[in-house]
Length: 366
Image (cartoon, rainbow, N blue to C red; front, side, top):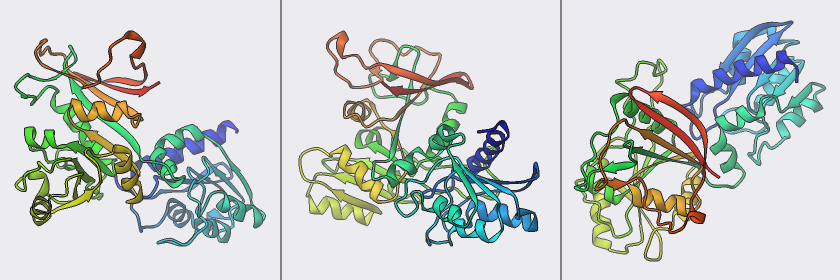
């Protein structure tokens, strides 16, 4: 990898991030075309069903694409989906070299795009800024390889690690800037999971609301994530706000109560039933993967958040910490019953930054 290759791929990744909130279930992809040291084209994939990044870049470059190097953040596709194969488009345009950041884990692509390019006599390489490219599409790459979605658990707490008063009162611990930041987490997620306790206590909306964003991409319409309520006993009231808002709401349950199911369906919910006494979170995530969900945001109380952690299903913890004290009688961050020091769960800090008057911690379980 040359320094020039890294610089141009970094530019392609910057373009790809412009689709952060709008491409699901597709990956975020950027492409830069460089001819004789000059950038002649660039583009990113914006929405499923619309042209891929390579097509936008080729259109911008025109005839200057001939003999150019294409820097693409994900291996060019080699199959017909909603759009034709990008590998063929690069070949027809006379591209001289293709540099990809990461190989696609989609079995329909999986090395075939680069192989087709090489078979046409075009030099092709892979692995430039691979780590950054994988992070951008971690959920997509895992799901395409047959795995579960990428799971983030979002929590908000006081300086003394509390999430609500003993009465359940919790609005608001964090400030407006942190709450806006959560909107961005929602927008990049294909699904938001909450528990019925949160629905009963807070009557949340769990929608993406972009009207207050100053940096929302112009011309982009947010894709409302699936809203999923974990509700084993079907305690969700048909009048809950979450059922009447734009987008789909799914209730995951183990209850076979036909009358309750019918009432919730009439109110706009979809019901996903499982056997047993408690919703199996792994099964639920597998169902979401089958529904083409790449990334899941868990916004819930300490019980369900603790259950996700105890089950080993969490990839990232996003914790907003406010400079306030709620006191020892307030509710803890998690219900995670640990009795000895040897049981403690160590975390690795991935990022820490100020968001308004609060701090946002991004952590991974070790």
